[in-house]
Image 1 (cartoon, one colour):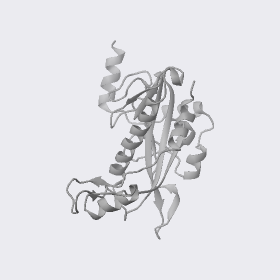
Image 2: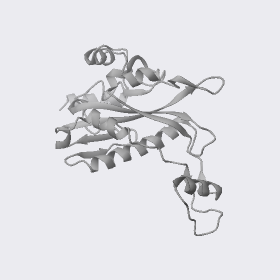
Image 3: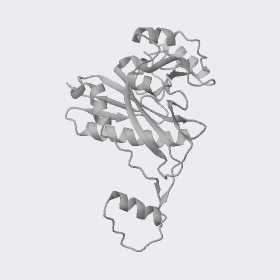
Length: 252
């Protein structure tokens, strides 16, 4: 049996960003285009006007990164005998679900979390994320782990494990790919959880923001039980749609 957490770490150690920008089919150069290697190809594509920059806006760039990481992990799982992988919805939970005999049966939820390194006044990267990573939406599937919610592949409690792949990067405004010094970190969410929300307006559970603490799995809870006890009793607002879903479940 393969340990999912260690398998993820092993795969992430091989990951390379590799996205140089957005490709545009029309270019300004002679054909055929012949390149000596990948770097030469990228240089020629940029010079020929084929490459447009990725967006700098954090959420938009994070979406691009998340899609790339999920695709990479699913490709790796396809090469592992007895493993299954299913991609989640864009705004659902999890981003990818692993299962099969290779991982001991059952299902394992893996969410991809992308965060930008904070930058100081002089433009130097700081040892923390620009904003807290969101671990879970606190008032829906997390609060009610035995209920099926739209966009969630199965009830939260049915997962044998929950894992996060964190993508920490520095924004490079001069490069069309925008991403520099990408680091992937694999952790169990409770190990990097804080006692703070990641948003003042949404019902999100936030992670610690020091990058060394994320690497070390050094959150603000001593045990997994403490984490669940604290956040499942947190006074999140309950949306009307959630109330209706809960009422429907109780009427069954």
